[in-house]
Length: 306
Image 1 (cartoon, rainbow, N blue to C red):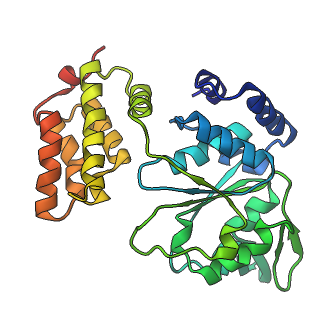
Image 2 (cartoon, rainbow, N blue to C red):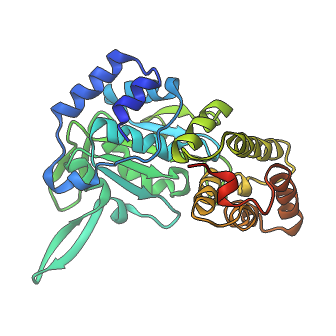
């Protein structure tokens, strides 16, 4: 995917794109980290959000992408890293993550005690984009080590070792969902170090673009049905008829991949969507919504054209 052409086609502000290109050219990725620069398969569709995120990063801010499930937070983070030409470190935040997992710790090498860099330290040193995935699942005391990294000081102070200064190209992008099991309130001091983007739910128009780009041979009538199916599931979630387990955009795309490979629609949609609901009653509600839009026995020839 040519991300520049796609962004221009989406109508992203031309002067903003020129600044992003200038940043890209002024900060080439370090050779040892070049393989970490993403090559995105999907584009984040949402011009206003994309422009706000890019402008914040150009101003040296760190981003917190907050919003409900299936709003494209990780897709946007990957797109931003690709456009800015930055190597990307994906750091999964979870309840047992600690300072050593983020910053690094002592290890033995050739009989000597040396410092093994953690992902935050590597990212800071090589001017990368650090994606802190599900940042509100980590303990606040673990995240406290990032305070000096994310504010005006721009440093990582490792006790017993050198003070590490952030490369000028370094940015951190946190993502968080509301209401997931295991999540907690973010510390106010941490939140103040980010600019916060409230991610909107994907619109019908943008979902159509997303599926069409991923599956260009999908027949138009079925494209409309899959888009409508996802909207039906979201409405059921909003009205609390079902949980958000089945509202899974990744699952819908996975099901379409399975159908494209030759699996019939019934088993593919069960694997990608229906079986995500583990409660039998909820699973039946999800199944009823799915089969109201897509028959169980549709095959590749019916769904996809040449």
